[in-house]
Length: 251
Image (cartoon, rainbow, N blue to C red):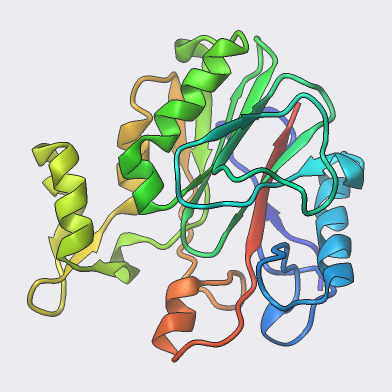
C-alpha cells in the first residue's frame, strides 16, 4: 500500500499529515504506526518513521518526536535527538533547516505551523486538555522567541476526531466553558442526556486566532478506519492495541 500524506494549502514548508497507509507494521498496528507507546515492534516503527521522513525530504535521523503528556510544554529543537529520546512535552519549535518535527495522534488534533519568512516551524499535539490549557498559544509564543511574527505565522489543523463523532461529558464541557463562557458555540446536543458533540478542530482554530491564517483539513479519524487510527474507535470496540499516525513539518 502506498505511503499517504495529506497536505495543506496553508503551509508552504515540507509537511505531511500522514495516514495509516504505507508502512510495515501488521495486525492492529497496520500499517504506518509511528508510535512507540504500544507493543508494536520497534524496528517496524523505526522503518515507518523513516519512510515518513524521506517523503518530506528529511534524513530519518532528523525526524524528532516527543513523549506526549497532554500538557503545554514546548521543546525548542536545536539538534535532533536520538530515536525514542524525546522530552516530555506536547509541542516543538525549531529554526534549524533539515530538522523535521513529528507529532503522534490518534484522534487529538495535530497542528503544524510555520513562519516561512522568519525561518521558524512548529508542531503541536492538541488534545482537548492541552488546547484548553494553552498549548497552541504557548507554541506560537515559542516561535516568536525564535524570530517569528504573529501576523506571519500560518497553521494547519490536521485530521482529528470531528464534531459528529466526538461525544463528550460534563467534565470536558465544563473545562472548556470555564476558560471562556462563549465557547458554548463549540458544542451541540449529543444523543444522550448530559452529553454533547464537541468541535475540537473549531476550538483549536479559535485558540489560534492571533496568527495570520489557520487552515483545517476535513478528515474525521474515527469515521475513517481505512485511513486513520482512532483512540475513541478502539474504546468503543472494547479496547485492545492501537497505532498512531504521524504529522510532521520541516524547514
